[in-house]
Length: 184
Image (cartoon, rainbow, N blue to C red; front, top):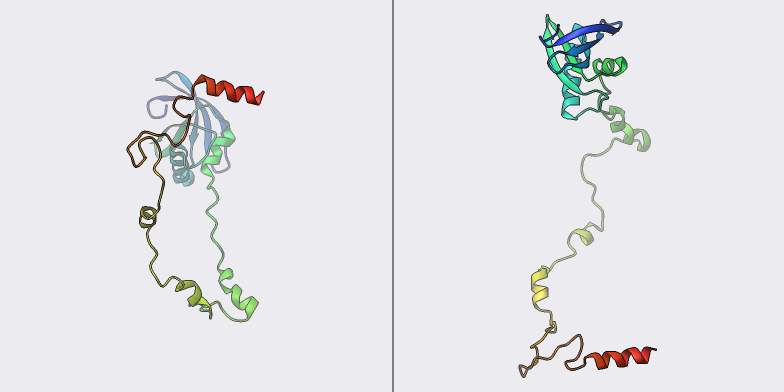
């Protein structure tokens, strides 16, 4: 009995490092589970892997249901899973790639001198950095100076309501029929 809740029903596999993969039953929910009992030297790795899978930081083919310690042994309860998937949890994943030191000396190997840590300056640098001597006007200022026509009704000087776009007032169905007749 692990954690007062999980009953061991059988042993599936024992690794060379004494990690155990067991079958069991969750007695509260009455469902089958897989149990990984990690060897003492793999306990911290199993716990870290379980946390990574539970938080989504690490992909895994198991669903972590419980993690605990009993009698000094770390156990992990998952949904029913393959023994290989459970044993993968006690194997440390590849560490992130760190670029080797020797690339720092690449400048001396190719060019005969080490790379300089000072910025390089060129004759035409001023053309790029100091090209805009006068301040630019803002977009808001440029838009305020635009002369845009007023659209819609009521834009004539005499106050009359004359549309700029669309049908002319009074040009009803007869005008539309004339256009349709001309197209035919």
